[in-house]
Image 1: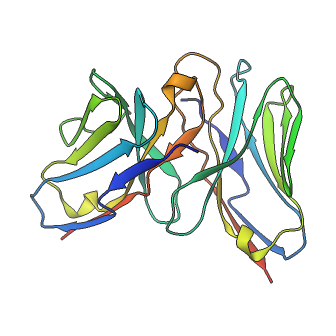
Image 2 (image 1 turned 90 degrees about the vertical axis):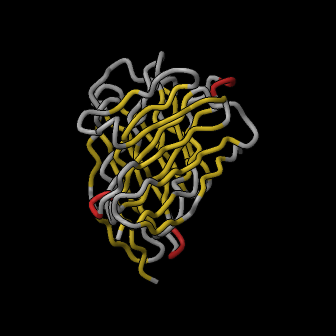
Length: 117
Length: 113
């Protein structure tokens, strides 16, 4: 199946700094990627839909200036958590669909555990 | 994306028993129904999906059934094994066009040896 690579796997940062998370589709082109946030023992909460070459679409309650999404190519989307605070600590995970195949199947990155001190 | 309601939130079974997890949806135009499995600390992975032109799909010990009239789809795991222990999510069905998948709240399945 398709492979989605996500880096870093974990990151610890100081409050007030910014953190960038990368999501790459390795063997397919992903016109659309999705970013989710997951708290322990909870479901995947959709944060935003990342569209190649255009602005991301954010879900209600998600601050677009706080969580910057860039999808500059068909294989790379990045999520930048700006001015991170302890409440931003969470597991962030991206997913992508193989747009060329018209598939609905999602392929997930391995996730990034963010800890803000 | 469309909201889905998933039940139960936790399910504890003995090894060898069957497990059933159910999700309900509201969009009658939905035509794609997936289930994902997430083991502890790992990424979710698609384990089975079904399209609305069939009522049931089976892959070894797992199966998905679809009831379009009642608007629900269920995951069935037979002869459960300890390695089936994980969190299972249904994703919101797709109905063509732009598909934005959201997820049910998840079911934590525990299979006791």
